[in-house]
Amino acid sequence: MPNLTKITLDARELEHPKPLELAMKALRELDDKNYFYMIHRKNPIPLLDMASEQKFHVFNQEDREGNWHILIAKTPSINLSELIETK
Image 1 (cartoon, one colour):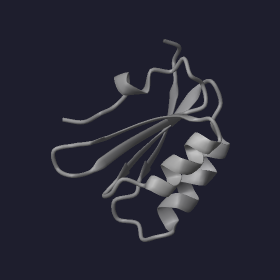
Image 2 (cartoon, one colour):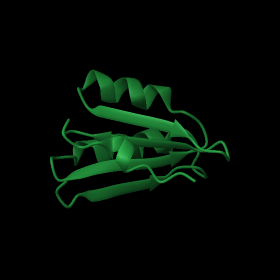
Image 3 (cartoon, rainbow, N blue to C red):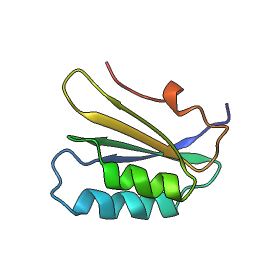
Image 4 (cartoon, helix red, strand yellow):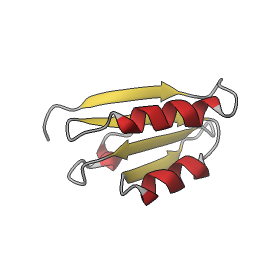
């Protein structure tokens, strides 16, 4: 896998609508050399729906503490499940 740049957003302490606004800004910056990694206290369904509609590749998973890890990439060759950082 090529050397990828991670664009990170820890949205656990942010109030609505800030996480979605920051995530959408990050998605506009995605290309084949980076991916977006967000940690959130809930599963951000509106973000996931928008990302899917725009043909982004999405992987999300809840960890044992109840935090959601959301990974989004523009390039289908990036295996997002290998990049998740849960315990």
